[in-house]
Image 1 (cartoon, rainbow over the protein chains, first blue to last red):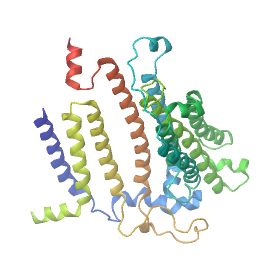
Image 2: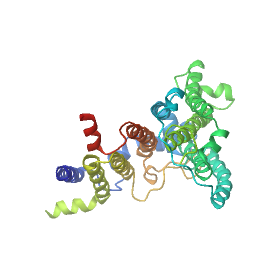
Image 3: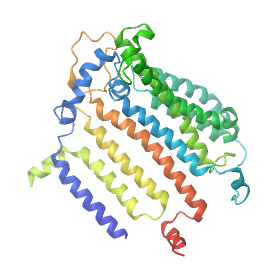
Image 4: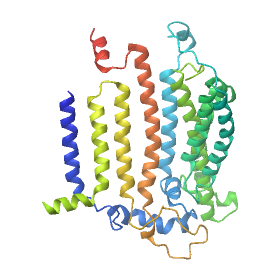
Length: 249
Length: 130
């Protein structure tokens, strides 16, 4: 079996290596990747959306549908993991394998975590809000925010985190994130534009249509960050405790 | 032959991704442990992300963020000075979906372990065959 597998992967590698010769040379500015759509985005995204970070502009405006369903996919993954691992009260009483007892907490790790966590959360908000001008945005900010909770769960235990952020709240907020994203899209629809056409928000926000696109992007990024934060913590909580929501790892 | 070698040397970014792809592919087929299979899947995924991001590179270009910030519209924008944003966007979403699928995969493995008390593939097959 292993020999066949090795043979298969070597054949795959050789085929790809030969095929890769037809790809453009690395770093070629005239390669097909760089000349069609990408150059349009680079030339026009600032005048059309007033967002200097092309990646953010493409992510949340030109490809807004993609990102919306991306957020929905993450939400679905969170729900799926919960459905697979959580057990009903009736089932939990019988047939639960004993979980390893957690050793005492380490004071150095706890103190360090207590110092780092607020900084991380502040930085996450900065990454989220500054995504228009620097690398960042909803996904990145949300992941950092979620990681701060996971750090807390690792340093103390899962119960400490879940007593501050209930599982029910977590799932509600992650649903709310998708709702914020889709809601902004529907709002644009009601204001007479297409779905996710942020320029229609100009009449509400009292800014020009181009600035309205920038603000609309920030709005949907907040929605993405809410979902990603809660789903990251929810995935960790479910996986680390085997769906029992006890002390965790 | 010399042309072929010359062409190979011009594509050394592809070597890395092909090597990672092979490692991931091998792990997915040959490994018996389900966690190792998932690790192989992650390596495979990383190879594809690396491939896309390396395609976005242009020589002598910088990150795809406009230098001047606001009020830069009046300047002409030099397209060759910025890496293409589109592959970065595609991979940004792919990474996040990768985390989500990894979570689901690990949850399924935990469930399998709960049911069969093992995550070795051949042992599971034996238990199913009984």
